[in-house]
Length: 556
Image (cartoon, rainbow, N blue to C red; front, side, top):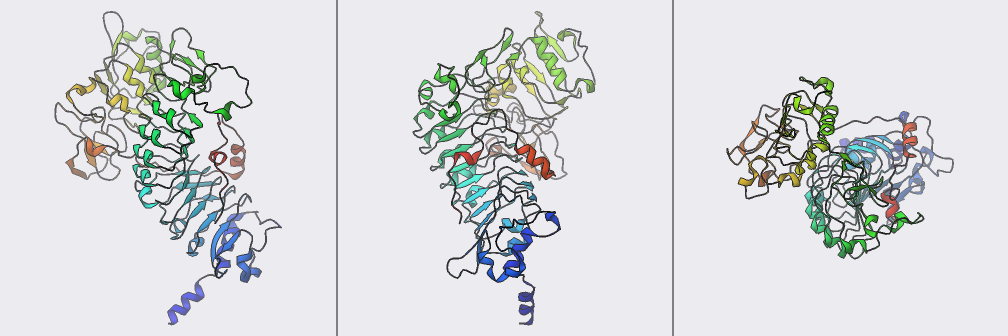
């Protein structure tokens, strides 16, 4: 009994807990506005009447909500707020809060709404415990980490998930298909990789899907054509391949669809052109386009700054096989491509440097045929640093490409599918993401004709797996084996970085969907700089941000 009394005395009051949010040395010179009612120790018995505080309707004594938007509040989010177990809402958007999201906040059992958008928070995205979570708005911060694989299974009641404009990595979980009440999903401007999960087609109430400005590969899932309530679909500025599904023209409520800045081929389906999409983007602009399809994506062998009309034909000796291309058309002259490879992979550090005045056929590691065409590039262990140039895919005679055992970073470009490769080795580098599907299905590459299934491990073992060659093989029965922990953080790993290996080998089916290793990047930013950065507009903002395409939400 005495121990209980002691704990009760030590337990801070609701007012004392709330005051940790607006006071303390981490707040600097910030003080609540003069009109900020309450919020001082003298009014602790009237805490439910403090501005921005909501209490339960029954007793009007238990705090259930905190709503303090756009007050330029500085400092960190105090972990003490986690003591208010009855909290259903915490909304602190548009302030200057920094630091990480406390685990005590993420552990609140009754949390339904958490809105910390447009602050300068960093650290890893935490694991949220509340099964009642309906709205999670964390956009406009500097959060890192990954989304847990079972997020969708644990938050089946969620209606709004806004993580736009952060630094989150990894893949989009398949479990998102379990969020049947989800209406708005914003993952724009992060660092997501991998493919768009087919399961998103099961989110039957989805209205807004924003996946633009990431590193997504693969094709557009056909399941998205089944979303009868979908209004806005942003897929621009990724690395998607394949063609546009014609079924998107049958999505009845679709009004916005952006897909430029990818690596899609084919043409825009005519029925999709006739839907009159993206009217808001062109509203007020001079009408220069007579081709409705160009309003969605410029055709192949053309380009524009936005990837949409008016479209400009590629210059002579330049090429572009993609629709909606927003960069310069590529120089596919063999000499230019070889020079690009040299420049983009830190030529100064090569162990066998090339003489730029020599023809490509004289370079170390380059083999040409009798007509002077490059048929093989073998720069294994040459000390390459940087990214793999996409232009290599347009070497029309290239049969073998060995980039293994270097320090290459970034992603494996899907453009390599255009070269007539029968051998590709990118093992032993520091490449992230997944093998693009269009490269996995390319006939003949690395003995792919011997497999009756769609394979990717014959190109490279996925993240989390390894083999002595960095890839699987149907001809030698060599399989990619799993590493424990984070022992294989890159594509094509040849040895585990940890001493303990999983003994069993996994088949191709068992290694589908492996996520990236979390790369936690701590971002310490000065509040004044962030305010300036916020004012800078990107060249192609279709709508200012996710908030602009959704109605104002009622607070709890």
